[in-house]
Length: 461
Ligand SMILES: Cc1cc2nc3c(=O)[nH]c(=O)nc-3n(C[C@H](O)[C@H](O)[C@H](O)COP(=O)(O)OP(=O)(O)OC[C@H]3O[C@@H](n4cnc5c(N)ncnc54)[C@H](O)[C@@H]3O)c2cc1C
Image (cartoon, rainbow, N blue to C red):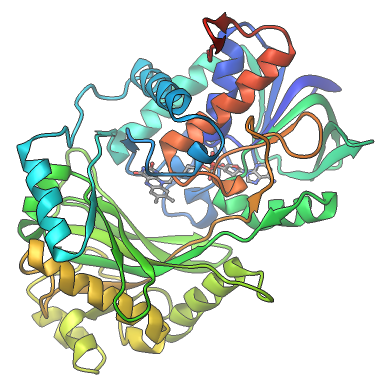
Protein backbone atom coordinates (compact mmCIF):
# COMPACT_ATOMS: atom_id res chain seq x y z
CA UNK A 1 0.00 0.00 0.00
CA UNK A 2 1.18 3.49 -0.82
CA UNK A 3 1.55 5.92 2.07
CA UNK A 4 -1.03 8.32 0.73
CA UNK A 5 -3.76 8.79 -1.87
CA UNK A 6 -5.65 11.68 -3.33
CA UNK A 7 -8.94 9.96 -2.53
CA UNK A 8 -9.59 7.12 -0.06
CA UNK A 9 -12.95 5.38 -0.41
CA UNK A 10 -14.45 3.28 2.38
CA UNK A 11 -16.58 0.37 1.17
CA UNK A 12 -17.24 -0.98 -2.32
CA UNK A 13 -21.03 -0.84 -2.49
CA UNK A 14 -22.73 0.99 -5.36
CA UNK A 15 -22.25 4.38 -3.69
CA UNK A 16 -18.50 3.86 -3.42
CA UNK A 17 -18.13 2.28 -6.86
CA UNK A 18 -19.93 5.14 -8.58
CA UNK A 19 -17.77 7.64 -6.72
CA UNK A 20 -14.66 5.86 -8.02
CA UNK A 21 -16.06 5.53 -11.56
CA UNK A 22 -16.86 9.25 -11.64
CA UNK A 23 -13.35 10.17 -10.51
CA UNK A 24 -11.83 7.79 -13.04
CA UNK A 25 -13.88 9.30 -15.88
CA UNK A 26 -11.72 12.42 -15.89
CA UNK A 27 -8.46 10.64 -15.27
CA UNK A 28 -8.13 10.65 -11.46
CA UNK A 29 -6.20 7.47 -10.67
CA UNK A 30 -4.75 8.10 -7.22
CA UNK A 31 -7.61 6.30 -5.49
CA UNK A 32 -7.72 3.57 -2.84
CA UNK A 33 -10.78 1.51 -1.96
CA UNK A 34 -10.87 -0.19 1.44
CA UNK A 35 -13.45 -2.93 1.73
CA UNK A 36 -13.99 -5.12 4.76
CA UNK A 37 -15.50 -7.97 2.70
CA UNK A 38 -14.17 -10.07 -0.13
CA UNK A 39 -13.77 -9.69 -3.88
CA UNK A 40 -16.80 -10.54 -6.00
CA UNK A 41 -15.62 -13.98 -7.18
CA UNK A 42 -14.88 -15.02 -3.61
CA UNK A 43 -18.20 -13.92 -2.17
CA UNK A 44 -20.79 -16.59 -1.53
CA UNK A 45 -24.43 -15.65 -1.14
CA UNK A 46 -26.15 -16.83 2.00
CA UNK A 47 -22.97 -16.90 4.04
CA UNK A 48 -23.89 -14.48 6.85
CA UNK A 49 -22.17 -11.15 6.52
CA UNK A 50 -20.77 -12.10 3.12
CA UNK A 51 -24.23 -11.51 1.73
CA UNK A 52 -23.88 -7.81 2.48
CA UNK A 53 -20.12 -7.23 2.58
CA UNK A 54 -17.63 -7.24 -0.24
CA UNK A 55 -17.32 -5.99 -3.82
CA UNK A 56 -20.71 -4.59 -4.85
CA UNK A 57 -21.89 -4.27 -1.23
CA UNK A 58 -25.44 -5.25 -0.33
CA UNK A 59 -26.33 -4.87 -4.00
CA UNK A 60 -24.17 -7.77 -5.18
CA UNK A 61 -26.68 -10.50 -4.45
CA UNK A 62 -29.66 -8.22 -4.63
CA UNK A 63 -32.38 -8.50 -7.14
CA UNK A 64 -30.89 -5.57 -8.96
CA UNK A 65 -34.02 -3.55 -9.47
CA UNK A 66 -32.90 -0.12 -10.60
CA UNK A 67 -35.79 2.17 -9.78
CA UNK A 68 -35.68 4.93 -12.35
CA UNK A 69 -37.57 7.43 -10.23
CA UNK A 70 -36.24 10.18 -8.00
CA UNK A 71 -39.22 9.72 -5.65
CA UNK A 72 -38.07 6.45 -4.14
CA UNK A 73 -34.91 4.93 -2.76
CA UNK A 74 -33.65 7.89 -0.80
CA UNK A 75 -33.75 11.53 0.12
CA UNK A 76 -31.32 13.08 -2.34
CA UNK A 77 -33.93 15.61 -3.40
CA UNK A 78 -33.36 17.19 0.02
CA UNK A 79 -29.81 17.96 -1.14
CA UNK A 80 -29.87 18.82 -4.82
CA UNK A 81 -32.48 20.37 -7.11
CA UNK A 82 -34.89 18.03 -8.86
CA UNK A 83 -33.51 18.78 -12.34
CA UNK A 84 -29.96 17.89 -11.29
CA UNK A 85 -31.16 14.73 -9.58
CA UNK A 86 -33.03 13.68 -12.72
CA UNK A 87 -29.94 14.38 -14.78
CA UNK A 88 -27.75 12.28 -12.47
CA UNK A 89 -30.29 9.47 -12.44
CA UNK A 90 -30.05 9.33 -16.23
CA UNK A 91 -26.27 9.24 -16.06
CA UNK A 92 -26.25 6.52 -13.41
CA UNK A 93 -28.64 4.45 -15.51
CA UNK A 94 -26.40 4.92 -18.58
CA UNK A 95 -23.43 3.72 -16.55
CA UNK A 96 -25.30 0.57 -15.49
CA UNK A 97 -26.22 0.01 -19.16
CA UNK A 98 -22.60 0.44 -20.21
CA UNK A 99 -21.60 -2.34 -17.82
CA UNK A 100 -24.18 -4.73 -19.21
CA UNK A 101 -27.57 -3.92 -17.61
CA UNK A 102 -30.45 -5.16 -19.78
CA UNK A 103 -32.11 -2.61 -22.05
CA UNK A 104 -35.67 -3.54 -21.15
CA UNK A 105 -37.58 -1.19 -18.85
CA UNK A 106 -40.56 -2.40 -16.81
CA UNK A 107 -43.51 -0.37 -15.58
CA UNK A 108 -43.58 2.22 -18.35
CA UNK A 109 -46.55 4.52 -18.02
CA UNK A 110 -49.74 3.44 -19.77
CA UNK A 111 -53.52 3.78 -19.52
CA UNK A 112 -53.45 0.83 -17.13
CA UNK A 113 -51.06 2.68 -14.80
CA UNK A 114 -53.40 5.65 -14.71
CA UNK A 115 -56.38 3.38 -14.03
CA UNK A 116 -54.52 1.66 -11.16
CA UNK A 117 -53.60 5.05 -9.76
CA UNK A 118 -57.27 6.05 -9.64
CA UNK A 119 -58.39 2.68 -8.27
CA UNK A 120 -55.79 2.87 -5.49
CA UNK A 121 -56.99 6.37 -4.56
CA UNK A 122 -60.53 5.10 -4.17
CA UNK A 123 -59.28 2.33 -1.89
CA UNK A 124 -57.33 4.79 0.27
CA UNK A 125 -53.88 4.01 -1.08
CA UNK A 126 -51.30 6.13 -2.83
CA UNK A 127 -49.82 4.35 -5.83
CA UNK A 128 -46.36 5.50 -6.92
CA UNK A 129 -45.85 4.60 -10.56
CA UNK A 130 -42.24 4.14 -11.61
CA UNK A 131 -40.02 2.59 -14.20
CA UNK A 132 -37.62 -0.20 -13.33
CA UNK A 133 -34.64 -1.74 -14.99
CA UNK A 134 -34.36 -5.27 -13.63
CA UNK A 135 -30.88 -6.75 -13.58
CA UNK A 136 -31.99 -10.01 -11.95
CA UNK A 137 -29.99 -11.68 -9.20
CA UNK A 138 -27.91 -13.77 -11.61
CA UNK A 139 -26.81 -10.72 -13.62
CA UNK A 140 -25.60 -8.59 -10.71
CA UNK A 141 -22.31 -10.42 -10.15
CA UNK A 142 -21.25 -10.33 -13.85
CA UNK A 143 -22.05 -6.59 -13.98
CA UNK A 144 -19.99 -6.02 -10.85
CA UNK A 145 -17.15 -8.04 -12.35
CA UNK A 146 -17.20 -5.70 -15.36
CA UNK A 147 -16.89 -2.71 -13.04
CA UNK A 148 -14.10 -4.51 -11.19
CA UNK A 149 -12.35 -5.07 -14.52
CA UNK A 150 -12.59 -1.36 -15.38
CA UNK A 151 -10.88 -0.49 -12.09
CA UNK A 152 -8.28 -3.25 -12.04
CA UNK A 153 -5.38 -1.14 -13.34
CA UNK A 154 -6.64 2.21 -12.13
CA UNK A 155 -7.56 1.94 -8.47
CA UNK A 156 -5.77 0.30 -5.51
CA UNK A 157 -8.34 -2.05 -4.00
CA UNK A 158 -7.86 -3.64 -0.59
CA UNK A 159 -10.20 -6.44 0.41
CA UNK A 160 -10.73 -7.79 3.92
CA UNK A 161 -9.39 -4.45 5.10
CA UNK A 162 -11.88 -2.79 7.45
CA UNK A 163 -11.41 0.87 8.21
CA UNK A 164 -11.28 1.43 11.95
CA UNK A 165 -11.15 5.20 12.23
CA UNK A 166 -11.55 8.32 10.18
CA UNK A 167 -8.51 10.53 10.76
CA UNK A 168 -9.02 14.24 11.21
CA UNK A 169 -6.69 17.07 12.09
CA UNK A 170 -7.82 20.62 12.75
CA UNK A 171 -11.27 20.07 11.25
CA UNK A 172 -9.83 18.62 8.04
CA UNK A 173 -9.62 15.03 6.87
CA UNK A 174 -6.17 13.47 6.83
CA UNK A 175 -6.92 9.83 5.97
CA UNK A 176 -8.09 6.58 7.50
CA UNK A 177 -6.76 4.18 10.11
CA UNK A 178 -7.18 0.55 9.13
CA UNK A 179 -8.09 -2.28 11.46
CA UNK A 180 -4.67 -3.84 10.75
CA UNK A 181 -3.01 -0.80 12.29
CA UNK A 182 -1.77 0.87 9.09
CA UNK A 183 -2.68 4.38 8.12
CA UNK A 184 -3.59 5.60 4.68
CA UNK A 185 -3.24 9.31 4.24
CA UNK A 186 -5.72 10.96 1.90
CA UNK A 187 -6.66 14.45 0.76
CA UNK A 188 -10.29 13.39 0.45
CA UNK A 189 -12.22 10.56 2.09
CA UNK A 190 -15.51 9.28 0.72
CA UNK A 191 -17.21 6.88 3.08
CA UNK A 192 -20.01 4.56 1.88
CA UNK A 193 -20.32 1.92 4.62
CA UNK A 194 -23.92 0.88 3.85
CA UNK A 195 -26.46 -0.44 6.31
CA UNK A 196 -24.01 -3.12 7.36
CA UNK A 197 -21.63 -0.40 8.53
CA UNK A 198 -24.36 1.68 10.16
CA UNK A 199 -23.33 0.89 13.73
CA UNK A 200 -19.66 1.58 13.01
CA UNK A 201 -20.25 4.90 11.30
CA UNK A 202 -22.71 5.98 14.00
CA UNK A 203 -19.96 5.59 16.60
CA UNK A 204 -17.40 7.28 14.37
CA UNK A 205 -19.53 10.36 13.70
CA UNK A 206 -20.35 10.61 17.40
CA UNK A 207 -16.63 10.50 18.19
CA UNK A 208 -15.97 13.17 15.57
CA UNK A 209 -18.85 15.36 16.77
CA UNK A 210 -20.74 15.33 13.45
CA UNK A 211 -24.37 16.18 14.24
CA UNK A 212 -27.10 13.74 13.21
CA UNK A 213 -30.78 13.08 13.68
CA UNK A 214 -32.25 9.60 14.13
CA UNK A 215 -33.94 8.23 11.01
CA UNK A 216 -37.27 6.44 11.16
CA UNK A 217 -36.99 2.68 11.56
CA UNK A 218 -39.07 0.51 9.23
CA UNK A 219 -40.36 -2.70 10.76
CA UNK A 220 -42.72 -5.16 9.17
CA UNK A 221 -43.34 -8.49 7.54
CA UNK A 222 -42.72 -10.13 4.19
CA UNK A 223 -45.93 -11.20 2.52
CA UNK A 224 -46.07 -14.15 0.12
CA UNK A 225 -48.99 -15.17 -2.08
CA UNK A 226 -49.55 -17.01 -5.35
CA UNK A 227 -48.15 -14.93 -8.19
CA UNK A 228 -51.55 -15.03 -9.92
CA UNK A 229 -53.12 -12.97 -7.11
CA UNK A 230 -50.66 -10.15 -7.64
CA UNK A 231 -50.50 -10.48 -11.42
CA UNK A 232 -52.65 -7.42 -11.97
CA UNK A 233 -50.19 -5.26 -10.01
CA UNK A 234 -46.97 -6.87 -11.21
CA UNK A 235 -48.09 -6.76 -14.84
CA UNK A 236 -48.78 -3.05 -14.69
CA UNK A 237 -46.17 -1.82 -12.30
CA UNK A 238 -43.63 -4.62 -11.91
CA UNK A 239 -42.57 -3.12 -8.59
CA UNK A 240 -45.86 -1.88 -7.20
CA UNK A 241 -45.31 0.76 -4.55
CA UNK A 242 -48.23 1.77 -2.38
CA UNK A 243 -48.38 4.04 0.62
CA UNK A 244 -51.09 3.79 3.24
CA UNK A 245 -51.72 5.80 6.39
CA UNK A 246 -53.13 3.41 8.97
CA UNK A 247 -56.60 4.14 10.29
CA UNK A 248 -55.82 3.33 13.90
CA UNK A 249 -52.41 4.92 14.30
CA UNK A 250 -52.04 7.19 11.25
CA UNK A 251 -48.65 5.53 10.72
CA UNK A 252 -47.03 5.54 7.29
CA UNK A 253 -47.18 2.00 5.95
CA UNK A 254 -45.78 1.00 2.58
CA UNK A 255 -45.21 -1.90 0.30
CA UNK A 256 -41.59 -2.50 -0.52
CA UNK A 257 -39.47 -4.67 -2.80
CA UNK A 258 -42.06 -6.70 -4.70
CA UNK A 259 -40.62 -9.82 -6.28
CA UNK A 260 -42.83 -11.42 -8.93
CA UNK A 261 -42.28 -15.20 -9.09
CA UNK A 262 -39.51 -14.66 -6.55
CA UNK A 263 -38.38 -16.24 -3.34
CA UNK A 264 -38.16 -15.22 0.27
CA UNK A 265 -34.66 -15.28 1.76
CA UNK A 266 -33.02 -14.63 5.09
CA UNK A 267 -30.55 -11.86 5.76
CA UNK A 268 -28.10 -11.87 8.65
CA UNK A 269 -26.72 -8.70 10.18
CA UNK A 270 -24.58 -9.04 13.31
CA UNK A 271 -26.06 -12.47 14.01
CA UNK A 272 -29.62 -11.19 13.76
CA UNK A 273 -31.64 -13.06 11.16
CA UNK A 274 -34.24 -11.07 9.28
CA UNK A 275 -36.21 -11.70 6.14
CA UNK A 276 -35.95 -10.28 2.62
CA UNK A 277 -36.93 -11.27 -0.90
CA UNK A 278 -35.59 -11.38 -4.43
CA UNK A 279 -36.36 -12.78 -7.85
CA UNK A 280 -34.20 -14.19 -10.61
CA UNK A 281 -34.53 -12.89 -14.17
CA UNK A 282 -35.05 -16.43 -15.50
CA UNK A 283 -35.74 -18.88 -12.62
CA UNK A 284 -39.32 -18.52 -11.44
CA UNK A 285 -41.29 -19.77 -8.43
CA UNK A 286 -45.10 -19.88 -8.20
CA UNK A 287 -45.23 -17.04 -5.69
CA UNK A 288 -44.79 -13.31 -5.49
CA UNK A 289 -43.49 -11.70 -2.31
CA UNK A 290 -43.26 -8.15 -1.01
CA UNK A 291 -42.72 -6.42 2.30
CA UNK A 292 -45.17 -4.29 4.24
CA UNK A 293 -43.21 -1.92 6.41
CA UNK A 294 -44.37 0.45 9.11
CA UNK A 295 -42.26 3.57 9.67
CA UNK A 296 -41.76 4.78 13.22
CA UNK A 297 -40.02 7.99 14.15
CA UNK A 298 -39.08 8.32 17.79
CA UNK A 299 -38.92 11.55 19.69
CA UNK A 300 -37.14 12.63 22.88
CA UNK A 301 -35.63 11.06 24.89
CA UNK A 302 -35.27 7.91 22.75
CA UNK A 303 -32.51 8.14 20.16
CA UNK A 304 -31.80 4.56 19.17
CA UNK A 305 -34.24 3.41 16.45
CA UNK A 306 -31.65 0.89 15.21
CA UNK A 307 -31.53 -0.64 18.68
CA UNK A 308 -35.33 -0.84 18.70
CA UNK A 309 -35.42 -2.60 15.32
CA UNK A 310 -32.75 -5.06 16.40
CA UNK A 311 -34.62 -5.80 19.62
CA UNK A 312 -37.74 -6.80 17.71
CA UNK A 313 -35.79 -8.86 15.18
CA UNK A 314 -34.02 -10.61 18.06
CA UNK A 315 -37.37 -11.44 19.60
CA UNK A 316 -38.39 -13.28 16.41
CA UNK A 317 -35.05 -15.11 16.46
CA UNK A 318 -35.53 -16.02 20.11
CA UNK A 319 -38.99 -17.47 19.57
CA UNK A 320 -38.49 -18.97 16.14
CA UNK A 321 -34.82 -19.80 16.10
CA UNK A 322 -34.60 -17.54 13.06
CA UNK A 323 -37.43 -16.31 10.86
CA UNK A 324 -41.06 -17.03 11.82
CA UNK A 325 -43.76 -17.87 9.26
CA UNK A 326 -47.50 -17.65 9.87
CA UNK A 327 -50.61 -17.93 7.74
CA UNK A 328 -52.68 -14.75 7.77
CA UNK A 329 -55.70 -16.89 8.74
CA UNK A 330 -53.90 -18.19 11.83
CA UNK A 331 -52.81 -14.71 12.82
CA UNK A 332 -56.36 -13.37 12.50
CA UNK A 333 -57.75 -16.33 14.46
CA UNK A 334 -55.25 -15.81 17.27
CA UNK A 335 -53.42 -19.12 16.92
CA UNK A 336 -49.92 -20.10 15.91
CA UNK A 337 -49.14 -21.75 12.60
CA UNK A 338 -47.79 -25.27 12.88
CA UNK A 339 -45.88 -27.33 10.29
CA UNK A 340 -49.15 -29.20 9.56
CA UNK A 341 -51.07 -25.97 8.98
CA UNK A 342 -48.34 -24.64 6.69
CA UNK A 343 -48.40 -27.98 4.82
CA UNK A 344 -52.13 -27.57 4.24
CA UNK A 345 -51.69 -24.01 3.03
CA UNK A 346 -52.50 -23.32 -0.63
CA UNK A 347 -49.50 -20.99 -0.77
CA UNK A 348 -46.39 -23.08 -0.25
CA UNK A 349 -43.47 -21.16 1.28
CA UNK A 350 -40.40 -20.45 -0.81
CA UNK A 351 -38.43 -20.22 2.43
CA UNK A 352 -39.14 -23.67 3.89
CA UNK A 353 -36.60 -23.18 6.70
CA UNK A 354 -38.81 -20.53 8.38
CA UNK A 355 -40.31 -21.73 11.67
CA UNK A 356 -44.13 -21.86 11.84
CA UNK A 357 -45.14 -19.72 14.81
CA UNK A 358 -47.09 -16.73 16.03
CA UNK A 359 -46.02 -13.28 14.91
CA UNK A 360 -48.29 -11.60 17.45
CA UNK A 361 -45.70 -12.55 20.08
CA UNK A 362 -43.11 -10.58 18.14
CA UNK A 363 -44.50 -7.42 16.59
CA UNK A 364 -46.00 -4.62 18.68
CA UNK A 365 -49.78 -4.20 18.31
CA UNK A 366 -49.21 -0.93 16.52
CA UNK A 367 -47.22 -2.58 13.72
CA UNK A 368 -49.37 -5.69 13.40
CA UNK A 369 -52.57 -3.68 13.29
CA UNK A 370 -51.23 -1.34 10.62
CA UNK A 371 -50.04 -4.27 8.48
CA UNK A 372 -53.36 -6.09 8.75
CA UNK A 373 -55.22 -2.88 7.87
CA UNK A 374 -53.07 -2.37 4.80
CA UNK A 375 -53.60 -5.95 3.61
CA UNK A 376 -57.35 -5.42 3.96
CA UNK A 377 -57.20 -2.25 1.87
CA UNK A 378 -54.90 -3.87 -0.72
CA UNK A 379 -57.49 -6.61 -1.12
CA UNK A 380 -59.80 -4.07 -2.75
CA UNK A 381 -57.42 -3.65 -5.66
CA UNK A 382 -55.86 -7.14 -5.60
CA UNK A 383 -58.64 -9.49 -4.50
CA UNK A 384 -57.22 -12.53 -2.76
CA UNK A 385 -54.33 -10.94 -0.91
CA UNK A 386 -56.32 -10.79 2.34
CA UNK A 387 -56.72 -14.55 2.24
CA UNK A 388 -56.28 -17.10 5.03
CA UNK A 389 -53.58 -18.64 2.86
CA UNK A 390 -51.43 -15.56 2.54
CA UNK A 391 -48.09 -16.24 4.23
CA UNK A 392 -46.39 -13.75 6.53
CA UNK A 393 -42.70 -13.94 7.44
CA UNK A 394 -41.17 -11.98 10.25
CA UNK A 395 -39.51 -9.86 10.75
CA UNK A 396 -38.29 -7.57 8.05
CA UNK A 397 -36.45 -4.59 9.44
CA UNK A 398 -34.79 -1.76 7.61
CA UNK A 399 -32.17 -0.09 9.75
CA UNK A 400 -31.24 3.33 8.53
CA UNK A 401 -28.31 5.19 9.93
CA UNK A 402 -28.98 8.44 11.66
CA UNK A 403 -29.29 11.08 9.00
CA UNK A 404 -26.14 13.08 9.19
CA UNK A 405 -25.80 16.78 8.81
CA UNK A 406 -24.38 17.03 5.30
CA UNK A 407 -23.84 19.84 2.83
CA UNK A 408 -25.60 19.77 -0.57
CA UNK A 409 -22.49 18.00 -1.90
CA UNK A 410 -22.69 15.41 0.92
CA UNK A 411 -19.70 16.74 2.81
CA UNK A 412 -19.68 16.57 6.59
CA UNK A 413 -18.63 19.42 8.88
CA UNK A 414 -15.13 17.96 8.49
CA UNK A 415 -13.49 19.42 5.44
CA UNK A 416 -13.02 16.96 2.54
CA UNK A 417 -14.86 14.14 4.36
CA UNK A 418 -17.91 12.96 2.41
CA UNK A 419 -20.52 10.46 3.55
CA UNK A 420 -22.62 8.70 0.96
CA UNK A 421 -25.14 5.93 0.42
CA UNK A 422 -27.32 3.99 2.82
CA UNK A 423 -24.78 4.31 5.63
CA UNK A 424 -25.25 8.08 5.68
CA UNK A 425 -29.00 7.57 6.09
CA UNK A 426 -29.69 9.46 2.86
CA UNK A 427 -30.33 6.64 0.38
CA UNK A 428 -32.18 3.34 0.42
CA UNK A 429 -31.61 1.79 -2.99
CA UNK A 430 -29.08 1.06 -5.70
CA UNK A 431 -29.76 4.05 -7.93
CA UNK A 432 -29.79 6.77 -5.30
CA UNK A 433 -26.80 5.17 -3.55
CA UNK A 434 -24.94 5.29 -6.88
CA UNK A 435 -25.98 8.90 -7.45
CA UNK A 436 -24.79 9.91 -3.98
CA UNK A 437 -21.31 8.68 -4.92
CA UNK A 438 -21.45 10.72 -8.11
CA UNK A 439 -22.41 13.87 -6.18
CA UNK A 440 -19.46 13.59 -3.77
CA UNK A 441 -17.01 12.72 -6.54
CA UNK A 442 -18.18 15.65 -8.66
CA UNK A 443 -17.53 18.04 -5.79
CA UNK A 444 -14.04 16.60 -5.36
CA UNK A 445 -13.45 17.01 -9.10
CA UNK A 446 -14.61 20.60 -8.83
CA UNK A 447 -12.10 21.22 -6.03
CA UNK A 448 -9.39 19.56 -8.09
CA UNK A 449 -10.29 21.92 -10.93
CA UNK A 450 -11.28 18.99 -13.12
CA UNK A 451 -15.00 19.45 -13.41
CA UNK A 452 -16.36 20.67 -16.68
CA UNK A 453 -18.61 23.69 -16.28
CA UNK A 454 -21.79 23.52 -18.28
CA UNK A 455 -24.07 26.35 -19.32
CA UNK A 456 -25.63 27.91 -16.27
CA UNK A 457 -23.59 26.12 -13.63
CA UNK A 458 -22.01 22.84 -12.81
CA UNK A 459 -22.10 20.00 -15.21
CA UNK A 460 -21.94 16.61 -13.60
CA UNK A 461 -19.64 14.04 -15.16
C1 LIG B 1 -31.17 -8.69 -0.29
C2 LIG B 1 -31.20 -7.25 -0.76
C3 LIG B 1 -31.91 -6.94 -1.91
C4 LIG B 1 -31.92 -5.62 -2.39
N1 LIG B 1 -32.56 -5.34 -3.56
C5 LIG B 1 -32.52 -4.10 -4.06
C6 LIG B 1 -33.11 -3.80 -5.31
O1 LIG B 1 -33.64 -4.67 -6.00
N2 LIG B 1 -33.09 -2.52 -5.75
C7 LIG B 1 -32.49 -1.51 -5.04
O2 LIG B 1 -32.49 -0.37 -5.50
N3 LIG B 1 -31.89 -1.77 -3.85
C8 LIG B 1 -31.89 -3.03 -3.35
N4 LIG B 1 -31.29 -3.29 -2.15
C9 LIG B 1 -30.65 -2.18 -1.43
C10 LIG B 1 -29.29 -1.84 -2.04
O3 LIG B 1 -28.53 -3.01 -2.16
C11 LIG B 1 -28.63 -0.79 -1.18
O4 LIG B 1 -29.45 0.34 -1.12
C12 LIG B 1 -27.27 -0.38 -1.73
O5 LIG B 1 -26.44 -1.50 -1.88
C13 LIG B 1 -26.61 0.65 -0.81
O6 LIG B 1 -25.36 0.95 -1.31
P1 LIG B 1 -24.19 1.52 -0.37
O7 LIG B 1 -23.01 1.68 -1.26
O8 LIG B 1 -24.68 2.69 0.37
O9 LIG B 1 -23.92 0.40 0.72
P2 LIG B 1 -23.67 -1.16 0.63
O10 LIG B 1 -24.09 -1.70 -0.68
O11 LIG B 1 -24.26 -1.74 1.86
O12 LIG B 1 -22.09 -1.30 0.70
C14 LIG B 1 -21.35 -0.95 1.83
C15 LIG B 1 -20.00 -1.64 1.77
O13 LIG B 1 -19.14 -1.04 2.73
C16 LIG B 1 -18.39 -2.05 3.38
N5 LIG B 1 -18.01 -1.54 4.70
C17 LIG B 1 -18.82 -1.19 5.73
N6 LIG B 1 -18.12 -0.73 6.77
C18 LIG B 1 -16.81 -0.78 6.38
C19 LIG B 1 -15.58 -0.44 7.02
N7 LIG B 1 -15.54 0.06 8.27
N8 LIG B 1 -14.44 -0.63 6.34
C20 LIG B 1 -14.43 -1.12 5.06
N9 LIG B 1 -15.56 -1.46 4.41
C21 LIG B 1 -16.75 -1.29 5.07
C22 LIG B 1 -19.32 -3.23 3.45
O14 LIG B 1 -18.60 -4.45 3.58
C23 LIG B 1 -20.08 -3.13 2.11
O15 LIG B 1 -19.45 -3.89 1.10
C24 LIG B 1 -31.24 -4.60 -1.66
C25 LIG B 1 -30.55 -4.92 -0.48
C26 LIG B 1 -30.51 -6.23 -0.04
C27 LIG B 1 -29.73 -6.54 1.20
